[in-house]
Length: 170
Image (cartoon, rainbow, N blue to C red; front, side, top):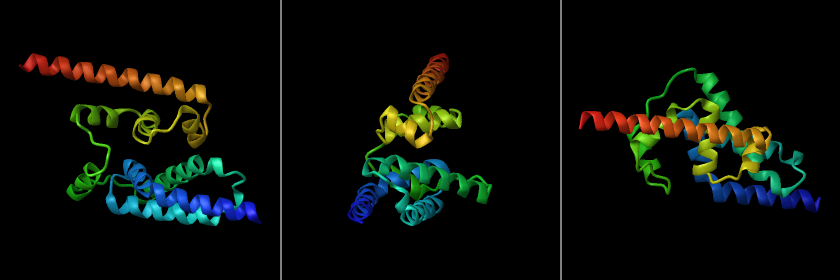
């Protein structure tokens, strides 16, 4: 009984401290402010309903990110439409600590295949370790490393091509 209470407190603390990160992560998937808020709310509800399945406090972070991923995918399937980015959402995102100083980098990241995009986002914007990403995505850590390096290679190629194009027009 005491262990479950401790896990519930840790879950509430995690959600409270990381609500902006969870929102930003959901927004990365659904690309719409209202849908991202709905995804986070639904993810918290799902987490509270299944908190009894957690055995250890150390897995709450990866467990919650997995719930957000699944809920985001469910939301995308449910809506089956592309959402244009809202200007107020852009301002909200730029108001946070993570800013895309380089629009070419932002476009290059968004052009990556979905599984690479997710790994880049988790590693560099959510600051998760390889092992944590592996737990979130339910993959082997070596698979995550391989995909991360491939994604970085694709980004480098994309950005180098963009620089060469820019130099041609100068």
